[in-house]
Length: 607
Ligand code: SF4
Image (cartoon, rainbow, N blue to C red; front, side, top):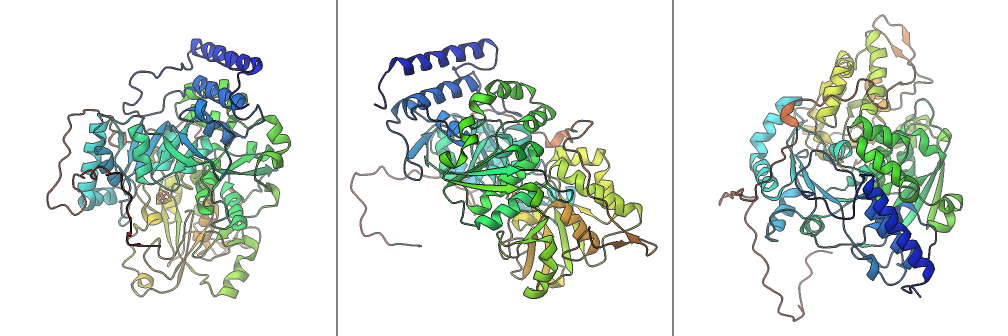
């Protein structure tokens, strides 16, 4: 039955092939791989939508018996290694799928092991495009450039290894200071309907641009780079329907903070979260990326939004108009769930959650876990009840979650109101801002945002992870030296104990950049702009207006400094030098070939 060749199925398959040819003639794609597809790229090329649709049509017809499909299913099954051999309808949560990702992204803490393993494959270059991003090893200390320079002293061996490996295998190399992996991927490599694996848990950020982007371990990335089909258990599907509009003080961060609170840190395990509904249309592309980013906090395989106008605008603004033209062509058939799914979501998703955006309020998740969600209206009482210090020692805007132009422009609009009345961040509260990429830094500086932040006392950090990954030199502070309880607020995505500064008694509350800004200005947890006021330089009350920011820069993005553009070198003769005294790097030796006998009586090292 499943693989029968009924006339109708044959016709539909033939029709798709004809459609592919049409698309190819229009210059969007062809089913043949273009030459040089895996040479290092500064930006993604136009995805092969014709091929995806052709493969999808085969699976739809031969395996799914033409039943309506969700967006996540379409992207997954269009990337099957061998759609012809799937055989029977896959069972979510049980069947293993062999997939062919389009791209790999790696950050500097996880890439070294992956590339040392990849070297064993003895391949002249990676089978698919890949990129390396140096973002995790820069310590936030004196700020900006000085911290990048310092990281070359502390991590030179890693950077040089990665740069040499990138050149040898044809991988794009983004130097320290260029930006955070997920922001760079969104700006340059994410493309609707494509599949990426990344050696970082917040890889799903690219779902904001309609990509199925999955965080994996290094060995999985090696499979993908070596051209071996990558195995994934068919995920269950969680549909999240968004209705209405966010209120003036709310932002996309509040949607995901609310959802994480509902689902808990384990509630998304084994699921892909797929968003749909009219509320999606009110969100920016980078806002959707924020939401997908923190899907990792519920353990979801990944999260994804359907292709729409906000993605089109973002692709054009980031110099990928051709990608948006291709996506426009593929939009209704491939880049959204089928209409029947949207009409009766409960029939096609394993679970459905409905969120009315107009009912959300700004909120704070924490401390010590990202799923303890407290709305702004309740946070003061919760702090008193739980003994959380209400004085805030540090307020941090940044990380891959919330460092877009829109995030920073909305926060800057609050900073400007304060600066105009002589209000500064109070003594005793540190206010730190880390742009997500060199492009964001240059654009926000050109548009006066950094000036607004600095006018109220901000310190600018490098375009990197910094305090989000614990690279925060806070050692001169008493609270850290003596491991005292202290409260910080951040626009980050994770807040497990000691993650940020090594102090297990630092309480980090995750919130939106707008709420971080308000908290910084008041120095108190729970400042509510609809009730509370600031005091200006003359002691008069200052009522803050809701934030106003631009989704995209009106004057376009600035590229930033040339030294932070990617290195796109490919020379397979590049030598990777190993220091015999290195504590980190050594050429790996392959395991001896398996002798065909089972291993028995092996000790269990960890459970
Ligand atoms: Fe990970 Fe934070 Fe860096 Fe994002 S900013 S990649 S969450 S360490």
